[in-house]
Length: 114
Length: 112
Image 1: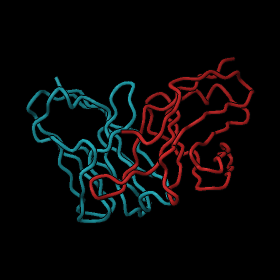
Image 2 (image 1 turned 45 degrees about the vertical axis):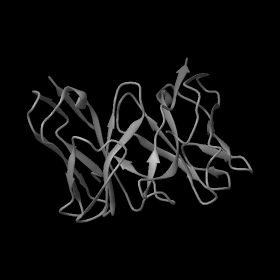
Image 3 (image 1 turned 135 degrees about the horizontal axis):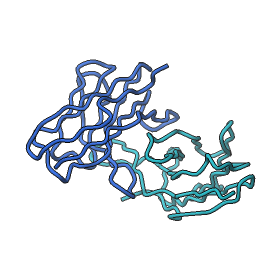
């Protein structure tokens, strides 16, 4: 049972570079989420998806793009990385949003922008 | 803004019950309260959730007040491995959609 898998686990970028973070889930969940977590703070929602082919903005979407081409995958893109995007990024999935369905999280991607 | 209020930190002796409070005074009638924990920067781990009634599972118990404005997570026999940041979360309607809003949580330290 893999659950939610994030790749890569660590990455160092230079300012202005681009990259894509991949999230994969094997639980057939409809909802998927990307969060960022800065030191000493809770998680902040970047973007989320309510199903294949759909995406929506969360609390802090600026500087990020997402795609959900397949139900099991949710990609987070940084087109031009900035030092302010240095953070730990977590992906999550759930059967539904809220209600009686909790979110399941991956182990995170630690991203440093120099 | 977070929809919940939690103390920033708490201590508990190993083997004792850890009681973590949470205020959610603006919770709506059909909204669940969720509890997660995060151990040393790992991915958050789901613990328990509830609506109106008290809930118990293999990890913890959740006590929700009758007016639903606050709740308490109880770890009945805390161990050193329960040292973590505990998050109490409710759903909020933002930007035309429902989102789970995470606060800073309570850092629980279990002491030997």
